[in-house]
View (cartoon, rainbow, N blue to C red):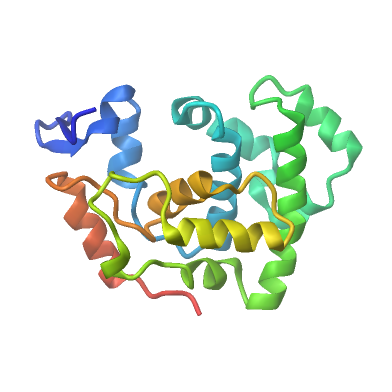
Length: 202
């Protein structure tokens, strides 16, 4: 895949945008910008776990359905889900009906509640795993990193599921802990500016 492709305005964007027309808006307005909101961070971890083995286009197209099905990814509500909710979700054609992934989201909601209690917030914990600039490789050259491996191991130790190093790396990219916009992409500097203006949660 090309490092960059022309966007709707003719300016270069990350090459993966060419895979689907709807990727340009997601790329320009969401991907790679720093996020400090617990709910959004939990949502993205859940959606990345659902993407495992699938395309992001499939998940992005169903994102509003996922939000409706999982109470807008309110971790406290999802943590209380029982077998009736699992059955409801397995019958919901608007989402990915995979029992293991559905049960993982419910489990991870409970683990997220525990983690926020221990660490102050999910955001504070996640942002402690931001890689140092000198540890970052050439943009879009990796699918895992030492930090995604470390965070994945720690989450698994805490009981999280479907949070392998590749899933976690995609999460770190999307949530702005790694600026992985391609060199030459017009959004790379915008993401860098957003990071400079961002206050890291403590």
